[in-house]
Length: 259
Image (cartoon, rainbow, N blue to C red; front, side, top):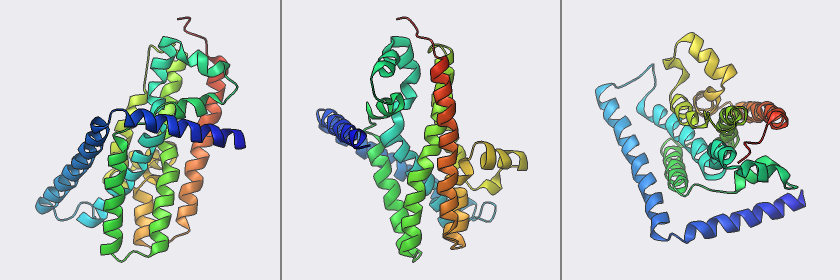
């Protein structure tokens, strides 16, 4: 465990140094993501000037759901974004290099690259959450639990990306479904009540995107049932554990691309 902690610290140093090389590009990308999020918030506000409530949700409640989902997804992008490159690793033969090293292949994959844009995304999402917490007099415990849940539910996005990456392992990099995680993110930004019953069941129990923001917002924030945070964390970890076991099985079945 100590060895992996040292490796993680080394990866962090290398990745942040590589980002710092680009100087203004790095900072402009962060500012760009912040502006994009502010535009998204403005669009939501404009929508609510036309439609005061959607399925009983006010603007503040929908903004809270959006901020929670965005924070979770930004954490995924900050630390786990390299899983989107599994197909590219396989095609170029780089994936074989991960397998021959005496370190967990997924650990290497996750830490070989960070997404510089995502830090601006994370900053503005947390800022929106903090603003909502102050304006609504949210208890500090609830606010901290929301941040904890965001960290945990980022594993759901990681798991969905790995599921897409397994297709790349089977097809030797010819097929890639990892990018569909961006489409899944869109589902997580809205209350479950806007979806029909079959889709709601899928988003709750099969692809647990409802646990990213909608369920935490309605139970932990609205109802003050803080203990639901434990369930959210548990489901996120359990889903990742299940997908990770499938990932290990696919690694056993993996055949090199030969390039």
